[in-house]
Length: 248
Image (cartoon, rainbow, N blue to C red; front, side):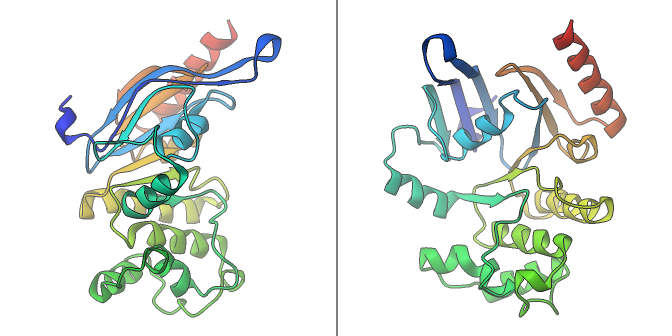
């Protein structure tokens, strides 16, 4: 892989909780390079370490050992203030439960990353984005006046508005019905295909993983399979096979 083009990289990342008899090795030496403009899905059973890994890649948690770089910048040694500035400049987030601020309108929620960073809104880009997510007539509503699918579309627009280096999506369809899930997956796929956005998505849903350019399977804190794109049926078959191996 060409490290010069790598958006996110991890080298020998470990994460250990507790000590002695209660020690838990959540991550056991994971290395990874993510290239720009690609959608990478991270799958694995509950407790496999996939969410821990994403939090470390995004600078929300620190590894016990190892290196993580975003846009070529080493983040594991950064202070909290430095990490905050890095996230403002380089990272967008989409969470399972939307994480919208209830007192703000949809428009204010979408523009929040720019407001916090003190940046001007590119009105043309903003208008295109809101039309893309299909919320032109809903932007003055507060989150409680929106459906779950609409709230997640607001969250997707918020993650894209600052044109971040990478978006981390943590179970973005985990709280949605099948129709809304399909809409969100289409938006995420389109963000890569149309805008060249880089996305790392943690999911347990084979349909979600099937939109990815690359699928990583994590088990017992390690990447056990690195696979190019696959159909939902192929993803499910792979998950079942890995589960069977883990149980044997």
